[in-house]
Length: 323
Image (cartoon, rainbow, N blue to C red; front, top):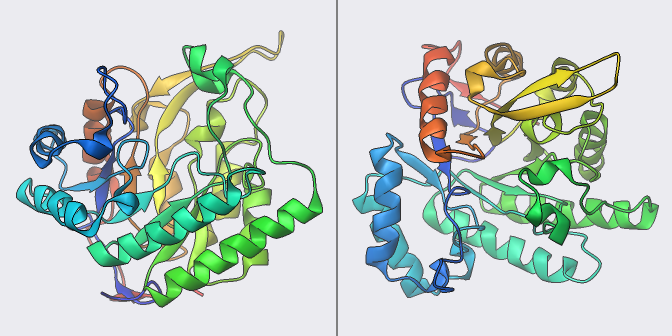
């Protein structure tokens, strides 16, 4: 595997663009878990991903915790992935807050298993965050982001703990030839562009950067920094990129803000311009297509086609170096 710091530059012909599995529940209607499914049942689900046109998939642990599969079961899963013509460029964790006051240590240990598993399957990237499970009120809402959730405390000791744990994961990932992306999410230490930049600069590891999931922020029904201002700050640090978009309407006379999910090319974030900006800084990581609402998988597939249309046909130079 090529290292995180030196890798042939991707072009539209070979850029890994993965489907997120957020549109598939981890717990099935009969109460059983995807974790316990037979390989044939995994295959049925992944066939939908392949049929949508994807050649890459991120298992996404809200669907399946590949890092918690036994070696034999992991081999079974990888066999299904290969059989469906898919590869795994990255593994994302969801709502496994690394500084959760009760589960933080367990989440850290799990993150180390994710790194080991990502290295085992030949992935390039892992993605971690500081956001926790949805609250009961969020679970009841049509769109969970319209209801306030958990917040990282305004506590220097907890901030320093986050820095230390991310640095620890970054060192492990570097030994495994992987990059770490920290997912931007509201009300966390990496919930703003300035906070995310401060975090990666304090962690100070060349393979640790930012998952610029700006969709997580522009969808909020509250004032947020303009998406372009955030892109300009984050661009030098961008890694594994979760992409999704939203319409956003702000009424300056009443202060009301309304958002709704939208395909990448129709939302408020101009991804054509955002991608050009990160490419100026040598961005060379996979993309992950996400979408909430409706047929999220099909909309993600439409987003994949859009990305392939706007990504560069060629890139100057043959390799990129970060750090």
